[in-house]
Image 1: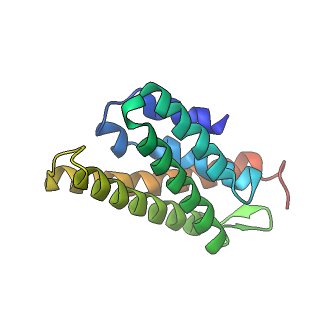
Image 2: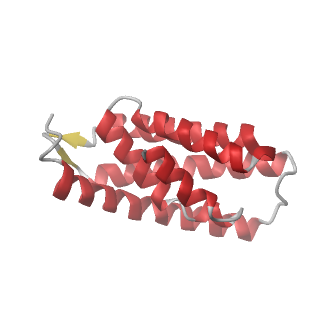
Length: 158
């Protein structure tokens, strides 16, 4: 379900605007990682990327690949930074995890899409997308931590 929510938040926005507003995608992937554990964000990202490929068939391999890489990054950084401790989420660690994931996938997608000629090279546009993407990672980290610590932690003790 979290993959579907991520998809809905991306599908309604045109490219490149959808690249700037990833807060819902980051939040849903982080929650999937925390709820399912292990590779939860990766599972949600496969659903998200597959559904995006249906509504944007010309970009199917890119939608799936970029979403999958993003989900893997979220899962890996959440694990590396040991975000969940005693059933609670460490907000700063989660925020760093999401900012790094968002920044890395942003750089990868910008590099590949411009290299392949799918998007024109407009440095100022990509700088704006990158900065707004990082800000979205910060907001998503805070919101995910808030949702988890205030509403979900008591139901998912570990």
